[in-house]
Image 1 (tube, one colour):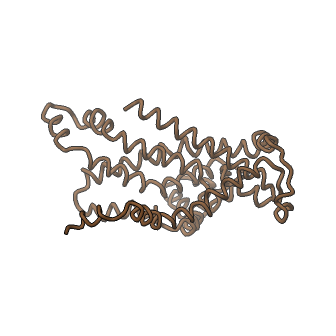
Image 2 (image 1 turned 135 degrees about the horizontal axis):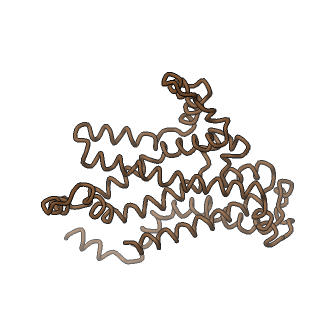
Image 3 (image 1 turned 90 degrees about the vertical axis):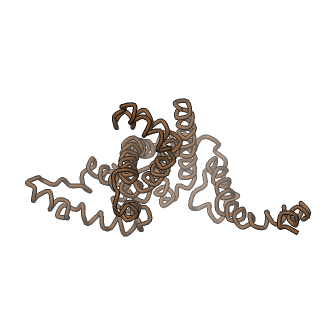
Length: 300
């Protein structure tokens, strides 16, 4: 008797129970550490809960939308929202462009040691961010290796971490360095899914390499582009590790993202404001994700 026959002879209830047994660990972890805390945070974002109310969380007062109104009119939150927008507008296209360039090079340009280059470019993704931030802090100090190299070229190195404009640039560079490997792998998977016959037929018809890239490669890469765009936008909208470890949100709050602002509110005991700010950010990320999906699907 075949395995297929034995499987079909088993009661459907037994198969369902077996499936739930395998799914149960994930569901328990998801509900305990994600769904239930998120629901509690949503409820308490409509209250005046503070650090003094943690021992008696049921004695708080509902303020309804007053907490959200305070957050949306808070100067620090609005500034962090603008800073996060800069991270997204500058960082996402930069990361995607470099990732696509590396993917193109690995797909057709680099012939030898391709696996070695792929691993080297992907290494920052799995590198410990704390160790990476410490190295970047040292490299971009006033007398660090970066400014020393610029001085040897006859250039005056800026105050990378002390100047507000240069600090946000340094954070974007670190974040790009960390995320470009993800973009590269996803774009490379998309490029390898394009049939070689299409490019060969276009080349025989006289299409140049730039025309083949614009009219064949990019259109066929739209599924990968959609995925990378959404992932990178969410990543940059939730940016926390890089500004926290590199600049602590400074100087003068120039690199304070919304996620870092929420973290600081918790540290200051403004729990309700932190929860409300988190959900404001969640709504913004969800709206941007939906808009990106619709725009890219409409263009395909």
